[in-house]
Image (tube, rainbow, N blue to C red; front, side):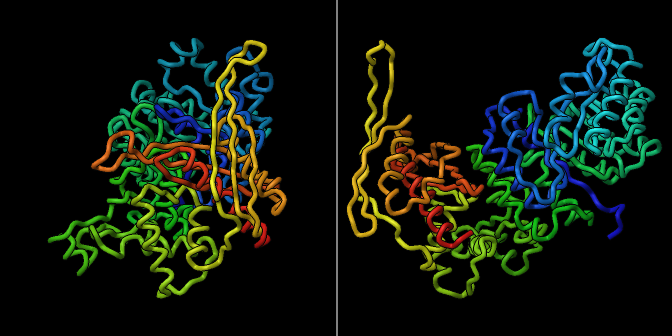
Length: 534
C-alpha cells in the first residue's frame, strides 16, 4: 500500500487517561501498559509529563523497554520572558530518556490573551523557539495545537499562523486538537481540508475529545480529509467524557477504510486482550458492550439472530470477531471462548493440537473460573500456569498445609500507635513439612515474607523476586447473596532481578486467602521460568 495511506497512531493513555475521574496509574501500571501498546504496534507511546508529579518522574527514570514504538514526553512551550534553553518546564523534557517531545501550545487568540496574558506575536515566538529547541535536543518534536478548532473558527489566520510557527522549525507532527470536544465531524472534515492547503496532511494529526459523543467519528473524518496521525487512548479514557477510543479507531481504519497502520493483522488479534488488560490494571470492569472488543460485541441470543448468524455470520456481524481477538457468543454455547484460549496458548509458545481433549478441559476450566470471578487478561502468568498445569507441564513445587495471619494494633513504648502483622505458614516442600513465622508491613507482606522464608532453603532463587504492585477489586456478590458475600479479586505484579515482570490473580470471599492464591501463583511462575531458563 502506498505511503500516503499509512496512518500513524499516537497513544496518550498514560497521560490523558490519568485525568479520568477515579483513575490513578502506578509506575507499574504505566510500564505494563506501555509495553502492551508497543507489542500491538502503536507508533508513539506518550509516557506523561516529566517534572509534573512523582509518578511520572519515577516512570521516566526507569522507562519501559519499547521495541517498536517511539517513547514520547509531554510538556508545554516555554514561558514568557525565558529562552527555551533556560525554561524550567523544558529542562525535564529534553533531559528525559524520551525519544521525542510533544509540546502543547495555545492557538486560540482568546486564550493567548486571557490565559497566557501575552501578545499574539510573543505566543508565536514561544511556539517556534520551543519546537526548535526540542528538535535540536531530541531530533523529533510534535506540536499539539490546543483548542485549534475553536481558535480557527474565531480567527483562522492566527490559528494557521500558530501551526506554521511550529512547522517552520521542524515539528514532525502538528496535531489539531478539539480540546473541549465540541466540534462535530462535518466541521472537522471541512476545517482539516482547509488547513491542508497550508500544511501537508502527512505532517498533520488529529486529537478529538468525546464531549459530543463523536470523538471516534471526528477522528475518522479528519483522516478522510487528509491527516495522517491519530491520537487517542485505550477505551477512550480521559477527562470529562474522555478521548477518542483507539480500540475503535484502529480496526475501523484497517477493516473499514483500508488504511495501513503499525498494527498489523497479528496486532489486531490482540486488541481485545489489550483493552481488557488496561481495564484490569486499572481495577475497572470491562465494558461488555464496547465496540469490537466487548464481551457482548458479538453475542447473540437464541432465536432469529442466532439462527441467522450460524448460517452466515455476515447477517448480524459487521466483521469476523476473531480478527480483533474477540469471539462470537451464542448465549449458552459451549464453543464460546475456545478460539481465545487457543490464541493465548499460541502467544505463550504452547504448541498443542486443537483437537486434544486437554484443550477442551482447559477451555472448560477457563470458562468456569471466569464465571467465578477470575480475569486472565491482566494476569498472564496465572493463565500460563493454569494452561501448563492442565497440559501436565508444571510440577507441584509445594503444598499449603495451613496459614494464619494476625494483626496487632497497639501503642509502643514511645507512645506511638503502631500496627503490626504476623503470618504463620506451614508448607509441605521437598517431602518435608516446614513451618515459619514472619512479621510484615501489613498482612499480605507478612504472608509473602513467611512463604519465602519457608521456601528459601529449597528454592534460593526466590531471593531475587519481589512484589511490585498489589490491587484489590470487590466483585459483585451472587444473585442470592448480600454485599458481604462478594468475591474479592486480588491482582499481584511481581518482578525479579533479571528484569522479568509477571502478574497473577487470586479470588476468594476472604481478601487474605485471595492474596495467598495470587502469591502462590507468582512464586510458582518464578520457579517454572527459572527451570525453563527464560
